[in-house]
Amino acid sequence: MHFRAAILAGCVATLVPALGMADSAETKAFVLEALQNTLLAGDVDAVDRYFAEDYIQHNPMFADGVEGQKAVVGFLSATEGFKAEYVRVIADDDIVAIHARYEGFGPTATIGFDVFRVEDGKIAEHWDNLIAETPPNPSGHTQIDGATEITDLDKTEANKATVTDFITRSLINQEDIDITQYISPVTYIQHNPMVADGLEGFGAFMAEMAAQGMTMEYSVLHRVIGEGNFVLTMSEGTLGGQPQAFYDLFRLDDGLIVEHWDVIAPMPGPDAPHNGSGKF
Image 1 (tube, rainbow, N blue to C red):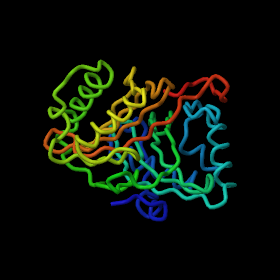
Image 2: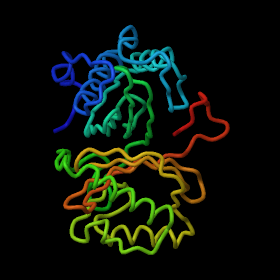
Image 3: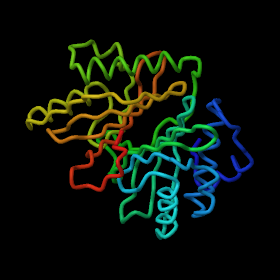
């Protein structure tokens, strides 16, 4: 199922969250309602109903606080042709993560992950990672196609643990691991724009990077968000020696990673605008 802007109002418009809301399904519905009635409707006045007065904004282009979010809504309402397609939405307690495609920011669409934290019935914090849409990868997959159904809710914590262990051991500690303990050797669908399917595709990509003298290093795993068979990680590190933010979305089946999407974007440099909250 795709969460498209055109149907959000009908899905969630009647939900009113309770203070201290902890149920993931209610949190997800509340965030979708908030986005529909503010960003997508272009209604600046509605921001106070959904966003906390001391709202923390990790996109450095916009200020903290509810007034900063009103500026975001005003900016988008003035952006001709702005559209949002919410392809995957997962919720983990008070956190909601959205995998989305946006139009209106230029001639090329934008692919991104937006992460929201809800506290006391309002959105209290936001992180994101955005990149321009690219053509399909060597296996013909786009940055957003693929499976969307959330299953295996009883395996959420186990799947989060598997992904955490994989990121920590393989990408941060760079241990010599048996990768088939984490990634399926039978089915591994890859949505990174430059990487083909399968462990062979991943190996070929890493070999090509090595041949060019480039390295990809993860240094800090900041957050792990999971719902059933989907797990999103938010990390930072370097690519080719340049600081990067890595958002990786994994789909697992029977305890192994079988599908992967990502958004890799440069960390804000010293000359970039800053709101004081930092990328993470």
